[in-house]
Amino acid sequence: MINRAIYDQLIKKEVLTVAEILIHAEQTSFLYDSDTVRDWKELTLSSGHTRFPVLDEQNKVCGIVTHKDIIDQDNSVKIKKLMTKQPITVSENSTVAACAHIMIWEGIEMIPVISRNQILAGIVTREDVLLAMQSADRQPQIGHTLNDQVLKHMRFQGSDIAVSITPQMSSSLGTVSKSVFVAIIEEATKYSMKRERKRELLIEHLNIYFLKTVPIDSELTVSLDMLDSGRKFAKLDVTICSRQETVAKAMLMCQLIEA
Image (cartoon, rainbow, N blue to C red; front, side):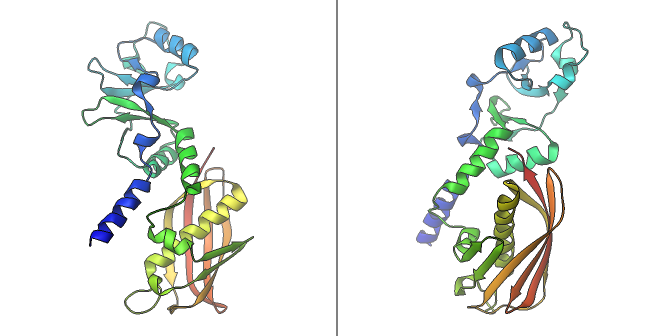
């Protein structure tokens, strides 16, 4: 139990959080809801940015203002009338992966980071999140998640992907567990999209069909076919085979993260 607790802590330490990549409040730019469009224009010129958190008189985050809100507005108009109220925010304990998910789905470039009492702690940008995810992929792992364990037994050569099934990957029935299949599909997809599109990704939807059981010591091959793709998404068909027999099929949708 002690070893397991230490192991869990090692994994937690390696999970990237917002606290590690945020730009602190004192180093970023923001506006107050009592400021005007003229103040926004001056801050844009001095900072080179166009998106800013908006704070109330208690320094709590109450909105976001961007260049789209300012278009054709008089210089004397208060920011409070133009800002987007109740903005999406994250805490310092939020994971970088959660931020990436929000940014992709909401189509936003910057998220305010708040403390427990809604005070502005800083901001994270899409660029910060992408660089952090790319850096994490290059770092050596100490504590290993299920995906890390599976990845150690996967082999990649061009478009060919193979997996050696070990006893640690089995269920109580002695066949490959469903969670291992998911890990194989996730890692194969990440490899394929990095190879073909040079993109980071988040899998948003996954349907798996288990057709045959797979015993320990089996050798699996994984093939992926692109069904549809765009600038921000991709749909793929995944086939997993053992001895030329299909043992599992999957269809997935993933969101692509732009640099």
